[in-house]
Length: 391
Image (cartoon, rainbow, N blue to C red; front, side, top):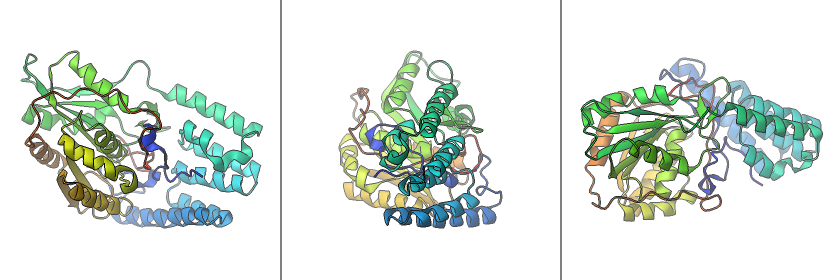
């Protein structure tokens, strides 16, 4: 039975599992987590992690009452995490308590759980499929998702160095904000690097709005990032042998997943505090090695949720022989200290890696069901928001 560990990306099968809890997100101002202050944030994050995991363990054992109790405690620590509300709905549905299940599903949607596809396929909710309350909640969710999509075509912020020669190929970085972030805010982080290194930086905006926050990558497809490259090429000469993908938190997860499964398109990838699934992504590292993809991973020493995954990713990348840059910082789930300097150091490393002179062909994109998907979720992070939850 599929079960949410955090709000999932709808980036096709590479992402068909569960997602990460909202609470892991960092605040836009670089603070220490929800609640303000590093000490308080760390304590609340630890309480959330402990109770959320206890809830997942209870569900795995079929102990749904215990699961409900644990997720309610997780909500006390991170009241804006929609995945806890959603998992409570699943528990009530498994217990046959239909009114409670529908009510908690409604609450999860109000908190920002927008994954229509997962809800429709999750067997944990089968007991309430025919209930009018469920159908009304799903219809309302579909309408909300449609209403919150940014108007018009693909939106992105493009940072172009002032001295660019439009007749000559220029390297390009596609940089993804965290869940709840905004492209314009995240683009500011990259302006100094663009100017000093002579590289363009395109920051696309997530396709759906997070209620009360910024934008989310839910409902997006890997084709979106290929489209960004194509749009930039309409106006500038892009050096197709030096196109990079980078991101923070959910954006970092997305960047790593997409780059590993389309390594012929990208020269390098940077995942900052992103999620990693060895089971689903280890094999893709072999292809990354063959394509010459440079993999960079930034992790927080105090990021209890994702540090073990970052270290596993490091081990898997080293085992595959991938060109790797790995750094840990004395932080929790946040951008590294002196982020502009760290981004400059990453780009200097990535751009020095050997590349084939043959331009990479843009792939058609991943199709649903082609590759498996690890977890991740919503909330606000650096790139435009505040942690009320969300990775």
